[in-house]
Length: 368
Image 1 (cartoon, rainbow, N blue to C red):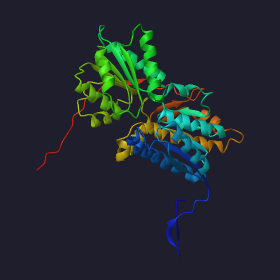
Image 2 (cartoon, rainbow, N blue to C red):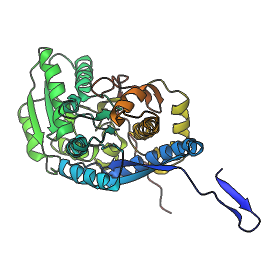
Image 3 (tube, rainbow, N blue to C red):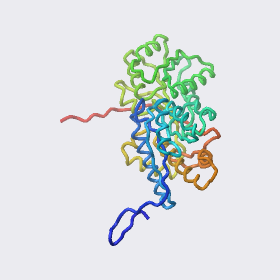
Image 4 (cartoon, helix red, strand yellow):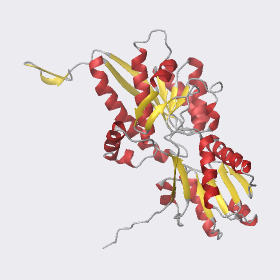
């Protein structure tokens, strides 16, 4: 009963007499990927509406409590404490791996589990170092292998590869994974250059690539810094092939770059076979501008849904921790991003990687 009518009061919203469960949502609303924050929120709200529609007749409603994890470990820890103080039972997020690591240190200390929708650092695979942690995206240990396979298939034998990457948890994790796969294949990197995620001047990095005679570049970055690096390469006359990971495979790269990004080849986690949930979410997300223009939105939706399902199931599982219930619930779940099955360490095997070349056209309205 969602509405009631009485002769004296007319039509009114029915009073909810059940239990409200708070779930935390770590959103990197500031920092390096803040541009995607609205998309994460929009996807989480779609999941919340569906969970609450289902939960109403079972006398359960969910409330999302948001906190800014800032794409940073310290900010992630502070945000996690604010969610603990708010009384959440579990936490969805964060997006950035470093923020997730900082949050996990605070949350796991009090037994609160978390499900990340976008943190891909291989370091998070260690369930001893990061207990009560789950994620619906595969580890970059796999993406490094995929990226190496792409380079090997595309690059002529006499080409040389430079690796340019951020030194944060995401950048170092994917870069190390690629470098390990590349050298295990009997190759030697032309040069490897790391930079802070806050860097904005890439002249010296690109100069080093040029002076070492590197003919191609593997770029591990986010879209904004990636665009700056691509522009600097163009200004210094680099004409070789550029490859990138999932941080590069976004429209933001083209939107921010002043030079052409066409022909860059990139990888990103592939969605599994789309089922009913996937089609429903795609329709709802497509009708929301922030969601439609976001990244990892299906994964954000899935993380909220799995957390809500698990919190509900725990009510009927006395003595079981929420982490135990999440592990049991997350076995063969049909999600918007594909089927979800958690491994013993909270990882998912994933559905492989999508590989594609960037093709982008700037459209400008004619002034009259």
